Image (tube, rainbow over all chains, first blue to last red):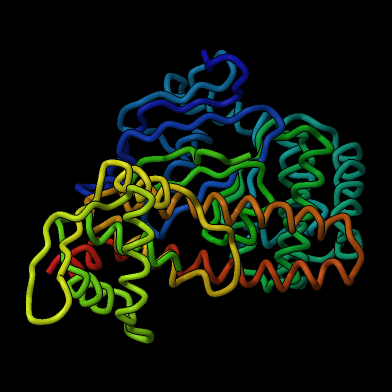
Length: 228
Length: 174
């Protein structure tokens, strides 16, 4: 079970790649609807923390609870089902499927959770409008700019109304203006749908869109005292 | 930069004469602006009056008396409070932050903690500016952007310093 009030809770996470430790007893708590920035220098373990929290990789030891379910005790199939139903993802380079149109990319997770094509595409178009990229709905990812592609990726992450969005350096490949627009749209849309956001970033200007920050150093996550 | 707190911090490792204090200050922090003797003695007499230092001994010589100063318990508390208190984010803050980091290392306090506290303070202000930008007009956005870029520069320096703390600790302790 997660502690009272928290939606996602990790305790004493350890993970090593070969002999190199990435997480060394990291704790983390996320409340419903909040935006938390995970900061730290390169190689500090912040992306590994995000991947463990999202159930993409399993820690060597430690636990991750989501509500009253323990992610770390689930089978791969159960974790995949949970990710599709409750989590959304935005990565640094969009990671859109190049063969599909932008609209089909947004609709894909909805289709995977059982939505009919027409319904999925209608909802996806709404999200593309919300992210101000409905004009590229019929284009393929290779035909749109980096900023547009990243907005499509945000639309895809939010279209399934997830309870948690995991964003790993979502503006890392964008210029300042596009980065800011993506952050504004991501945080406004997640707040409007009460989705919590775990935002991995090394940029302070991006972290400033969060409600509070957690700093990862040498594989240990630290809550900042005095943070809002 | 607070010269009083800096001299207090330097005294924490052991009693010193005014001259030694000036030399230690110049060595660590006085690259661009060495301290004048007058500043040392006026600062020490103020610290003495406030009970933050005491006279540990007086050597009579050919010239003026040479007082040796020692930090008091109240002085140690004062330094600790100053180091733990984040600075108000503003331009050209790095000299104060650098001084605090060096003093924390010299007095075996947690310099990484100090950097974390300062980062939190900077981010608190940056959140406020980001929110003002979100709800403001273009003029607001540009004004806030200017401040945000400056604060971001501070934070980048802070992260770089955090990554080099071990090396800095070696350098200041030798």
